[in-house]
Length: 268
Ligand SMILES: [Mg+2]
Image 1 (spheres, rainbow, N blue to C red):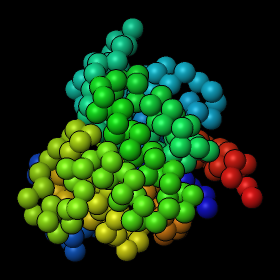
Image 2: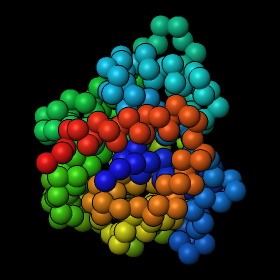
Image 3: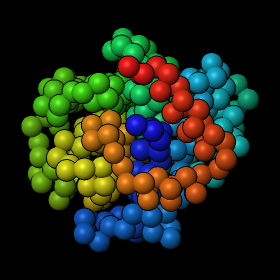
Image 4: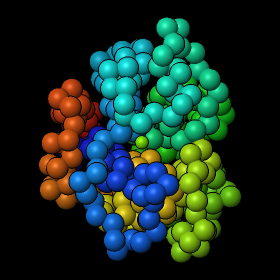
């Protein structure tokens, strides 16, 4: 496998065209991945910032702050923007889905469940030090971690969805999709993203299902995308290629360095 981080970026870019009240859609068949409006957003900037911090041993908060300030128009939430503008940025107790959207590198790199929880927590704490903020990152990263190592869907349903988000456990995509509305919290995002993955048939189907919930499309797809890639182990090359063309050079470099690190860590 390669292009691990791109599994988040593709979801974010595809979903970005359906972000915002007037662009949301529930029409699965009408969804075009990579329409002309599609671009990377905050989800991808911060995912790559976390990954870079792990790869280079940088301070997590400092690198999130630096990368965010270098790309100030990526669509951050208002509280995160204030954090970026501070010269002494402190965690602000967020339980927004920002912690879940940026943590995938923890799930990929971790070599044990304990390490995965620790690393996911490290990506959340600079801003999302609310119990639910940390939980959203840990649940998302653990899902990727277990799938990467060969867990099946039923195991994810039991060990993650039932344990972390019992309120979403047992619900089908068909049950939640019609009435699903915008929700930018961790508890309102991670469970539904897992359901999109559980009911998907491949990577693209998972991304489209996440977008067609008609909610926080880019973030739902950015969270569900890496889960699908960890399980199916493949994504269309054309999407990877198109997404790479839309990213700044430093992200392209972090993607390559991340692949190298993964190959070193998991070479059998
Ligand atoms: Mg976004």
